[in-house]
Image (cartoon, rainbow, N blue to C red; front, side, top):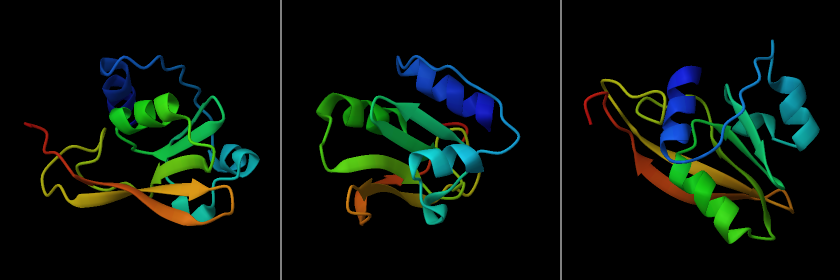
Length: 117
């Protein structure tokens, strides 16, 4: 799923530098990503992080709007149909933001995509 997610981000105009690591846990701990929001990919950009299969447009939105109260966004787990996980049985999934006070905020809800969409 890593290469598919990278392709999704690059196709949206984002510059991606991928670094393979044995575990993303140390990276998540360093940037304060709560275990509950964990997934398989951690991206760091500016003062923010994105965890998991976050749609590129939401990464771009965060980068453009630069909200002071949000530290990162996440698609917890690996929901079927999220970017890089397209396939049969796509599900609706939530993108969760974490604010500076440690509160979880619903950032967006998306319908997953099948491989043919």
